[in-house]
Image (cartoon, rainbow over all chains, first blue to last red; front, side, top):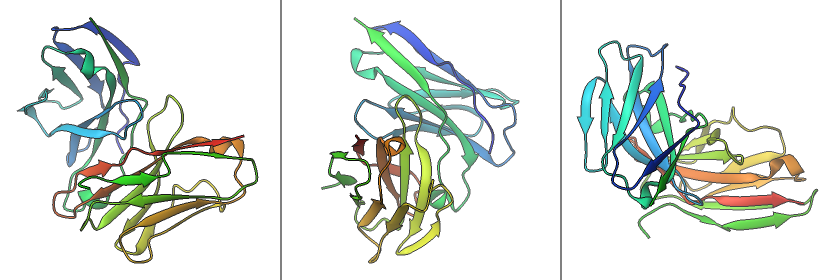
Length: 114
Length: 113
């Protein structure tokens, strides 16, 4: 499994855009990049997943350069409720993805200030 | 309910006691996972079920840990002779074979004193 590296923590203010970058130098051809969000006292929650270029949903955008050795999760106009830990995961999203254990790192703790 | 539920939410055990943690997955989800999350760390895989079959238990830290899912729905994680290092949040997740995304429960926080 490809190892991921992301900042331990980040601080931001309400209304700002937050970009969290994850490095995954050993990503394999079949690997997808997935981000999870975890609030205190809750389990992780899927945010977004991508393979290359850009993916956008109602919560976030994911930017993946051509070499795929890194990815950036972008949260537009954060609010206090976006304070959470964000995890970057890399793994093969094949047919058996629902059967595959997820490998989490330590994540990035985002603190949003008023 | 629509989500994964776990009980109890909090459990305090004295060292040496046995504990049982319950997970109710989303109805119809074939896959069920258990993870252990230490304070300040990301979740770590413990074991995986497909229906009632335990297909992977490579993450269980010792033979004091045992998991079952006898009817392919509810699962129980049992820890025998608890030790202080077992203190953690135990997360359960389930997934639909087709969609693949794992849906996590709120976890059970185990404190061993």
